[in-house]
Structures are given as C-alpha cells and as structure tokens.
Length: 116
Image (cartoon, rainbow, N blue to C red; front, top):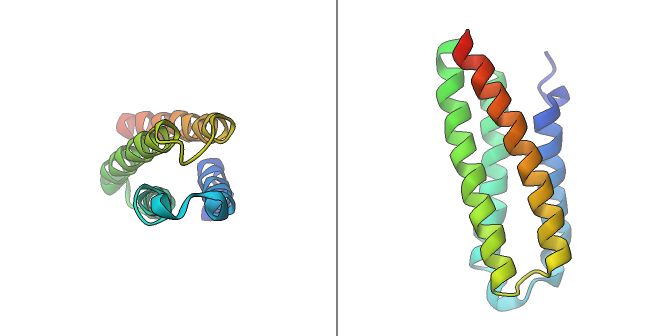
C-alpha cells in the first residue's frame, strides 16, 4: 500500500496546507501561541497516520488512538481560535468540516484495526 494514497492521509495533508495558507492572516499575538500549537497538532496527525500505515497490526490501534487524541486537541485549538477571533467563522467552519471528516475516517480505521 502506498502510504500517500491513504485517503485520511491525503485529507490530513490538505488540512495542514490550508492551515499554512491561513497563517499570514493570523494576528501576530495569536500566531506564536494557539496557532503554532494548531500547526504542530496537525503535523502530529499526519505523522501518526503515516506511522499507523506502516505499523504492525499489534501497534496500529494504539498509534491510531494517539492520533485521534491529537486530532481532538486540534479541534479544541481551532474552536479556541474562533472564540478569540484569531480566525473568522468561515475559516472555522471550513477547518472543522475537514477535521470532522478526518475524525470519521480515523474512527473507522480504529474500529477495523480492533476487529483484526
């Protein structure tokens, strides 16, 4: 399996590119706090997906669960950025939609890996 063809990887990769594209519009006071943590969490999700795609079955579920926790952390950071007005409602909705989609895909992968 080509790790870069995993749909959830492509979605997480696009999420980071979107976050990166928004960076210049983020107020300086927010850029080095919650924004940086959001970018880091997004990169951690990408890393977790790649690690899981290359892991043995016994390690896969734990890696996916850690990745899911990172995704939930990202979800909280994005909500916090909206509430502090670091991002507008339109960006928030767009980011949350992608995060929700990644969450559904990760959840399905976790369920499948537990059944094996």
